[in-house]
Length: 302
Ligand code: ADP
Ligand code: MG
Image (cartoon, rainbow, N blue to C red; front, side):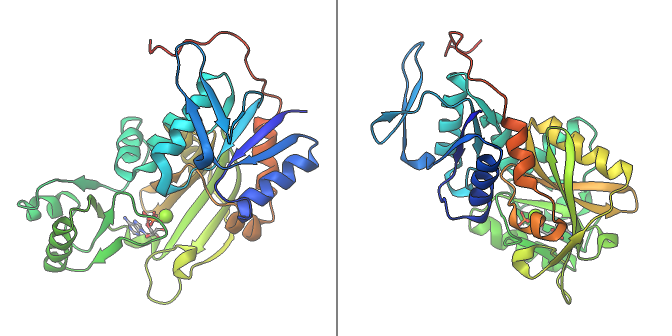
């Protein structure tokens, strides 16, 4: 029996419910903890976390589901549990690596993972240079911290691209400009990786003329049959970012799979319903059996 905490803001969410259910079924002691209600005690040599006055000092392992709105506080709580010797999936650093699209693509590029050509600039003065870098229009413009397809725009012409870049920058939004992968035509792959294995994968298909294959934008999902290269790429992407649990999204291009984003708290509903795989069970099995380390831990950086 492992003492497992699920860090989640909402116990009624599908993913949280399924993780708790899976842990119960596998005979573990499980508790859902709202990380926003945790207090972090920072003191030399004795890091602690409390929840409404009670110390949380006996979890063996933690499944961290940190919402995009609370990255800073959420990862601070996760880091505190790491300092206490608790096994966490995912680690605070891995969550931070994945949270920002540009940062994750930079890390992936250093390891040679296939990616769409992507440009990032602070100034909008050299539009044409940025547009040329990704092979001209049509091209995709994205908010660095967008999700659910919101903030992903397809610009058909160079002048449309210029206007969109100017508009976003005028709002002080951080954007990246990306090669449009035409061959993937409104489809993307979501590969669910747990401990260096793809446990389930789905092919998402946009409806009508929509090019974004997000379920929130009306896309449908079915079981995906991955090539060996796709499986290898998904596992490598998760590994390079340090993620034990990851939703790796890729486009099928004429030059092989191209990773567009990697999610550190991937939702379970879409993937479990599309594939029938017990993904929650796979996550719980991966954190079970890990033990709280009682060895003294230094909070000083090396
Ligand atoms: P979000 O985080 O909002 O889901 P994504 O980067 O995943 O943003 O983009 C949303 C969708 O848009 C993808 O699922 C994919 O279908 C489509 N898309 C994104 N980038 C490209 C691209 N470079 N070429 C073609 N389609 C893309
Ligand atoms: Mg996406």
